[in-house]
Length: 233
Ligand SMILES: [Mg+2]
Image (tube, rainbow, N blue to C red; front, side):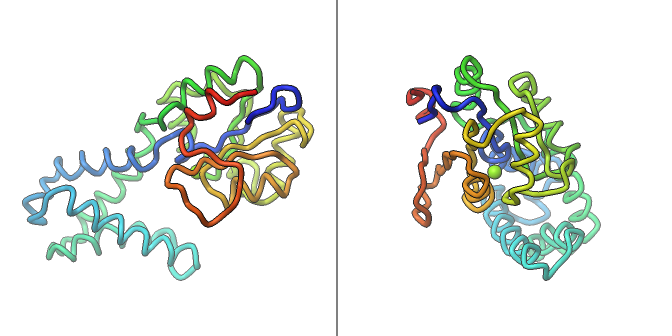
């Protein structure tokens, strides 16, 4: 699946490809839920609260992506409006929890299954790099906390470059920084629209990490990173 004759550079996405965003955010929320005794304040168990939060968060993210609300509004509203569903109206606590969540989230150390084994194996035959859409401070904390930094020659962060995936410019910049040609590069990522479409536009090979078996797109794909450990050719 990753051809050693032709390919020299493997580029990984970070969030939800190597770093388990969902599990890490659940862990932080669980901790905050207990710290602030939200089970009493909301008269709810964590699981019920978490399901309500995820739904509200997804709804507000959609509005944010459609430019209907700002990032600040998203941050102010996602906890407050979830709390309101449980009859709890204190805005200040909801905002404090929102800020704590943002601050603490990058310190999570849950990785996707097989991530470390895959990196260990691939580093023998390829140069490894990261291309991530995100903020540099936050992404570096994640990499450091998980001891991932030493695997990668280049850590390319959209905030530094000034372009987000799928903009072909970030892929060209990645080639330059890695001293790579397009036909030597492969991108592995979970987001079809940004990681896979972007890589294709740049003339790179790609593998879509598709753990939820989304059937919407046709692409070379794996359900679990472990499939790539055994499938290297
Ligand atoms: Mg991702």
